[in-house]
Length: 325
Image (cartoon, rainbow, N blue to C red; front, side, top):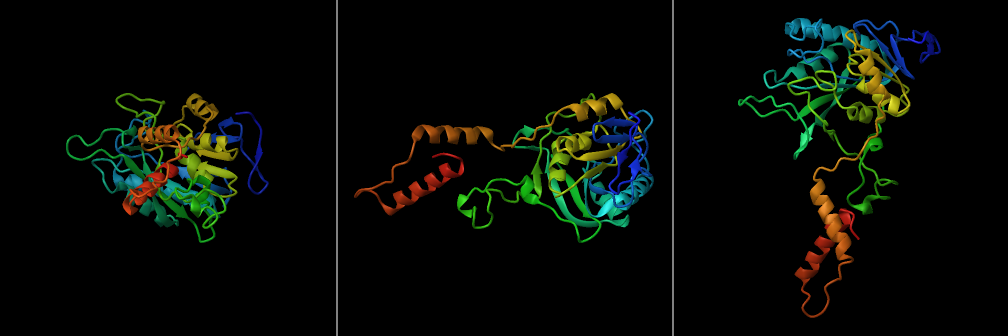
């Protein structure tokens, strides 16, 4: 704690926090009460609550409570989140189902709705696809392992705005540039492929039982135009604050069972987003062959049937879509 105070969204001083790393501030107490934050002062909330299925977060924390007690705890936190979120703010709530507790994500989302939030959309966060990325095996011979989790998009009212193109992808058909958008960027949709680099496995990696990758909050924050204050009520390792730091935005987190050195290290580690390719070997191969083959000559002459010309157009279109000449 550096003893300094920072201005809140409304110009009033706020406490410096128990840990400060540049513009990121972490309070080492439960987010059931967040007196440090003024009503309506937060633009974006990105968080993932404890799973309540026996994870080893901290020796003093019981992650296997009766469900009624667990949901009541979450409702207290969500009501505080509702208090501090701006009327135009956005709340990204990440919850994953386990092999033995399917449907828990839906029950948690309903608690958020009971706290006053409106559910606008369900996003799918894909952690592993086609062999890329990692997940924790959990089927135990009775079900398939979960390779995705839910991210619920919640708001307080109708005045919020998103910018999906801020995290969009290029058009496959370049003729759409200028027709649908002045730039080569389109909405990528509500399925986000953000792979884990490693799983927690049998032993704790990354110093925490269930951290999400920085790429998840980074993408969520970028979707909200003009955001200047980010909150994570379950800060964990500080992934959300690391994302906020990378984007040059102030962040506040709450963590009653902190590892200060780990949080500081996570925030201090520079995050650089990267484009993910689902089938890298295929795309690399097509690009290589397209570059070596050069321009495809259009079939001409008496032996050039309509079918040949159509096949040429299909091949040419595929190469152009994948970046060939």
